[in-house]
Length: 78
Image (cartoon, rainbow, N blue to C red; front, side):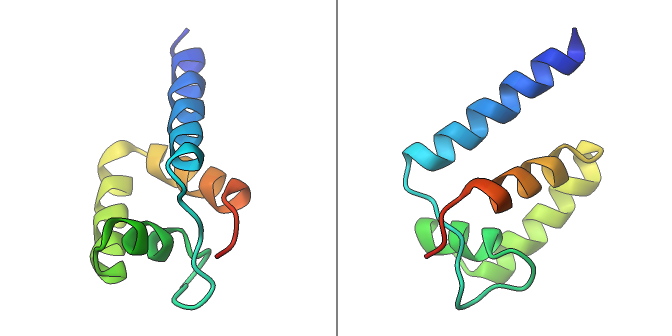
């Protein structure tokens, strides 16, 4: 049951990112460009987004890592 809830939440987050026009950044990427794309969309420094992503990944037990990978694969390139 918990696995199903996690899949639904991940799907909703990825859908929301697509609907709001998020894209990966080709110019300022370190790994997949996801954090740089989020930073560009939200007017934040990419390094700040990267640090927050790493911290959230450590706290979430891997949930953020799975979300990052899903966004890396599914978001369009900018």
